[in-house]
Length: 282
Ligand SMILES: C[S@@+](CC[C@H](N)C(=O)[O-])C[C@H]1O[C@@H](n2cnc3c(N)ncnc32)[C@H](O)[C@@H]1O
Image 1 (cartoon, rainbow, N blue to C red):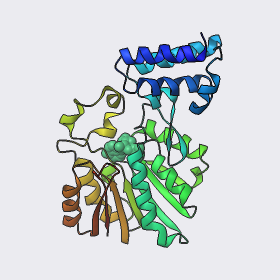
Image 2 (image 1 turned 90 degrees about the vertical axis):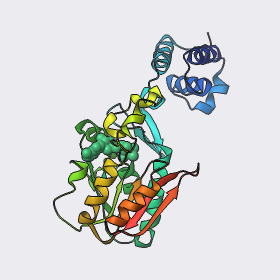
Image 3 (image 1 turned 30 degrees about the vertical axis):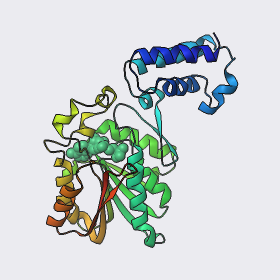
Image 4 (image 1 turned 60 degrees about the vertical axis):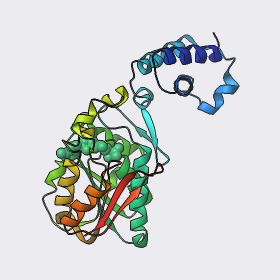
């Protein structure tokens, strides 16, 4: 069979297994097996696959048919133009989180020439800290997670993107932002924010991601509440807090920020018009 026939066979198989967007998934997997770009596939339609390529391709199709997320099967995910290595140790970086990083960069724009010290809580793959470090060459970043496996992955990503010397990865509880006070120009986090009861209703792919990265407690706000309470302690006066939030958590986040004494509080929406980022100034 040539590449085009393998592609059709995979598409039909993924469709039978109820994988969303079966054609696109089959294309990504075939491109990966051929070590080609997805856009090159049309040109390589008549190419026969070597035995090794057939094995790799069909192995990856089988994984996807078991609803393992495409990014875990491929082993990487693009984020802010960077190729981020992923594994089931950490959440797969999302496009919404690119919005969070863009908002943070906008806040820091007036200070582009100054040395900056940033804190990321719950770093996962390290995608946020790494994107910030790449965009802000003068910044030093402390990135925390409770998961040792996630921190190891984040360190590999930081090395691959040549920013490991400016990011210090620390195993620490999100809520324990203790230690020295008043040192961060910006604290940023994409915390777990899905209400526990909603987890059972998620697509099978999401359940492959670490529960620790998703579960926001009974009302989804447990981690957000803890970060908002702890952030004034670590932020410099005038320092910013930037949080990714759930699509209906804007009002609650604004209330928590007001109670904690933050100023210039606002919520930004994502491209679908849903609450996505909360920003406030100490
Ligand atoms: C939603 S994921 C975000 C990962 C990554 N920053 C991103 O945006 O793709 C939340 C992260 O917070 C971490 N986490 C959960 N509870 C934590 C806690 N109590 N202390 C520190 N990190 C925690 C998880 O391990 C996970 O990596």
